Length: 345
Image 1 (cartoon, rainbow, N blue to C red):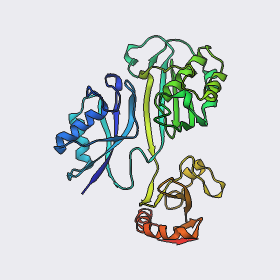
Image 2 (cartoon, helix red, strand yellow):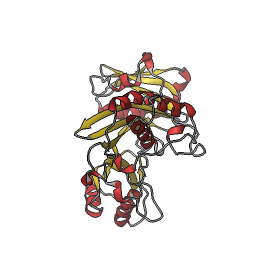
Image 3 (cartoon, rainbow, N blue to C red):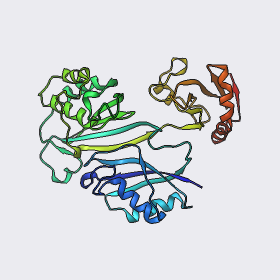
Image 4 (spheres, helix red, strand yellow):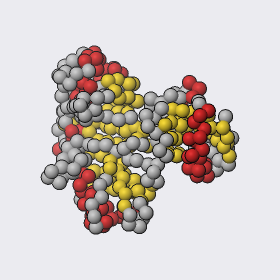
C-alpha cells in the first residue's frame, strides 16, 4: 500500500543552494531525501510546492513523498527532526489521500515576505533581512505596488524563459507593507510565482522608494512584457516563504475533478472566488465547490451545500453520467461534514 505524507518544513536557506537538487548535493530537497532513504532503504523523491532560490528561507514550505513502509506520520516527523541539520525543521507531518492531494497542483496561494532593514547594519539579521541601511519612501512604494495587483503578464518580472513557460500571466491577490522598528516587510500573496519574480518586484519597489524611478516604472515593466527590459533582483537573503495554502479536492478520477473554487474559475451566481472562500454552510464546509473536467479544468457545474443537503448543478445533462462514476468519493466526503443526502438540480 502506498502512503502519501504531506510535510511542512521550515529552513534557514543561507547555507543551501536552494530547494532543488544540485550537483554538489547541498539543497534542502536532498537533505530531506537523504533522511527518507536512510529509513526506507531506497531512494524516494520528494515533491515540493515549488522551488526557492539559493539563500531564500522558509517558515512553512510544503512537500510530499510516497512510501510503502507502514510508518506513521508522527514517527516520520520525529525521524526527520532527529536526523536533519539544525537549520531544517519539520513543523508538521500528516498522511493524506494519495489520489486527492498533490503538493504542487493543489496550491491555492502562496505568501512570501521580503524584509528590508532601513536602519544601521545588523549582523544578526543578515541571513533573513536585506541590509539596505537606507531610508525608503514607503508611501511611494505602496502607491507603485497597486500596479502589480490583480492579473498581469509578468514576463518582465521574472527569469523563467518563455520556452520553459510560455504563459507568464499570474495573479497577485494582495501586497501588504508592515514596519517594525527599522524593518520594512513587504508581503505578497498570489496563486503562483515565477523564478525570481518576488525578488524582481521587490527590487523595483525598492528603487522607487529610493526615488531612482517614478511609480510608473512598474507599469512600464509590465507593459514591456520583455525579458530584455532592464531589471535587477533584490538579494535572496531578504526573502522568506511564509505559507502555502491548499484548496480541498472532494473527488477525482480520469474524467472529473471536484474541488474548491480558485482564482480564474467561472463562478456561480456572479460570486467572486473570494466571496466563495468566505461562505461557509452550517455543516462547516464551504457552500460552493467547482465541478471541472480533469483535463483543461473547464467548469461543467458546481456543488451547493444548503441545510445539510448537497445539490449538484450541472450545466449539461450529458455530464450526469460522469458525476455518477465519481459519486462514491463524493459520498465519502459528505460523511466528513455530516451531509446526509444529495440530489441533482
